Image 1 (cartoon, rainbow, N blue to C red):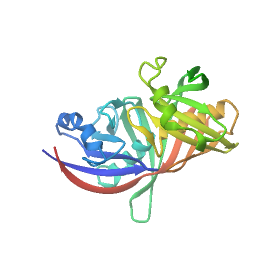
Image 2: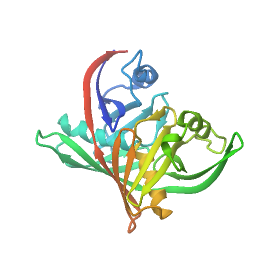
Image 3: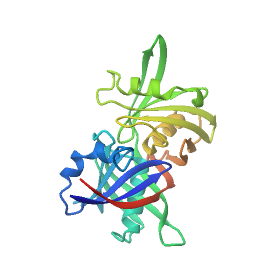
Image 4: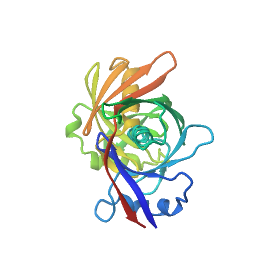
Length: 267
């Protein structure tokens, strides 16, 4: 079976995109860990399938590198918009995309070459806000938890560069208090308009960026009054612009989407 794919990234958060409209994609799903392997496959943080939708313009089906399905990916859905427009699957500049976490609205910005360069996403409302404490080696880790289509646990730290993400990330991700596991964000407040974040994504590990994680971290900082309603989130892969509308409590995320390369792979 020969698969056409497009490798794309949003701030270094990279995914394999496959047009699966009117196609059988079961074999792809069964081979996701192989496709994502950076030594023996294409290499990525996950796989995103583009499908038809009965309730929106298109449907996005997203999988982590270990093959587990996820509800949403902020960086991933921005690249979905670019994929659809650049490949001529749509000419709309405003798209409704069906996800496991509901329908998300994308607004596309076009560059001089008539390609998408930036996408703003209405991420909807945050939900299931709570606070937890986890003890790791006699150290109490205070977490602010919230869902933005998928679960996030946020730890506010003094200096994010000093955090051993690879040590604490998997312990928190797999803690018994998170029956579905959780993404983990370590956040440093720079000032009332800027925060710095590192992320451990469930099923993948530390990544250069996480769109839903940036949204979750920003909304926590806004609600806790660490920042204003308009926040720039500095990640290892770059900067995302997060805006919180207090009228409807929706979170808006804006950032780049980039095509890396295209190819074929045999499964």
